[in-house]
Length: 356
Picture: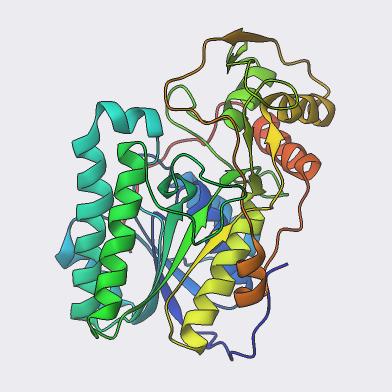
């Protein structure tokens, strides 16, 4: 479970959450509310649904969650959101996140992820908000020099998505060093999967899923005929790629621990968020078949260019700094993913946004 500091929470504290209606953002909003905060969700709803906000309210019993439909590249809108709602910190999820798409549409990724964060930081300065938790990624490490990845591993992203995360990390570090008064918690995610145990919120990708778990789940409910496994000749225990998977609720709890660390002792940091365990594609498929009681048809196809054979995190620093470690197993991740997908086979229903 996330470490609980001695920091005394202000139950009225409002936290700006760009991308708060998305997969990880929505789960983090649930945990923020559970911890006594009020998230102020800002989202352009390009890759998310307002229905997720309804589900956040349903899970938490909250009736009046502030929601603003806006793009983080709109600096004035971000400034107004923070000023109007008296926000004291930002937990930043907004951005594009598909590695493959980033190679074909790199300018979209630099615009959304880098220009968008620059806009957000300028708005924070105008609104005098000094704390930001940023969603980075293990993709900043690139090809492993050694495993597991520690925070001191060389940074050498191999795709535009990873480059945008690296660029934002550099920007945050330079801003912190400038003495501007802003401090940053940079969280390098590994592979988030699973869903809230209620089955009410989960990952709902547009179009064909780019990630393994939502694709497997869509095969299980009949939306896809079979899973394509990219490569079965890697130097791993079963020939398929190995990754460090982390339950999205564990990840959400880490954001609360990071936020409270920044607000308790304003000193910037960078940490890995992973379990420290590696599971192969076939490990995940077998665990999901057991959780769902459904067979997952699959076919082996050629490797994808740029895919790595295996990587996983060294999560020791997150435990030392934040008192945080994962508590959910792969079986838990698959069980909760199935609860979400089986209860919402077509994802979220759609409805229109009215900004707060």
